[in-house]
Amino acid sequence: KKYQLELKFCDKVLSELLKPKYSHFAWPFLQPVDPVALNIPTYYSVVKKPMDFGTIRTKLDQGEYENAKEFENDVKLVFQNCYKFNPGNDPIHQSGKSLEAIFDSEFSK
Ligand SMILES: Cc1ccc(Nc2c(-c3ccc(O)cc3)nc3c(C)cccn23)cc1
Image 1: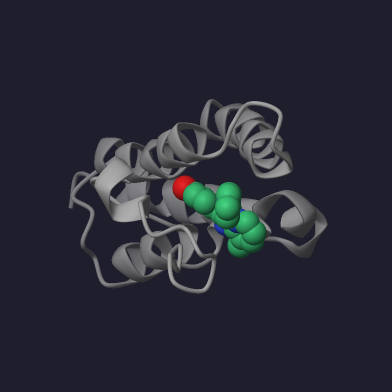
Image 2: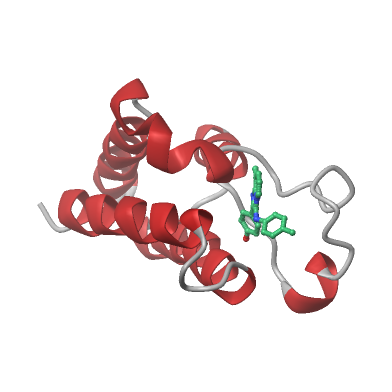
């Protein structure tokens, strides 16, 4: 029961991040990266632990996070994977930075 309140906060932050007003930043991260569709065959050799906000939403709804830390770790994984694979000047990299700033601001409220 102890972590219920924490996870309710995580749900609130995730819902905010997935709102249409942020979709111009969030769109590359809403679903698992499809290396075939994107023609990036090296993806799974570069990114050991793929993660995306659709998967995070499912894990949260299925009660797969024990606490806020586990949720935060998956969110940070989305961004770390993005920075590993998308060069600094790439629009996808910039979108990740913008969305991460929004996450950090919401998650520290
Ligand atoms: C050749 C090339 C270079 C970069 C990309 N990045 C990229 C990514 C991506 C997101 C997260 C991530 O951890 C890695 C990649 N998602 C996309 C999408 C949805 C459309 C176009 C480009 N996209 C795609 C192809």
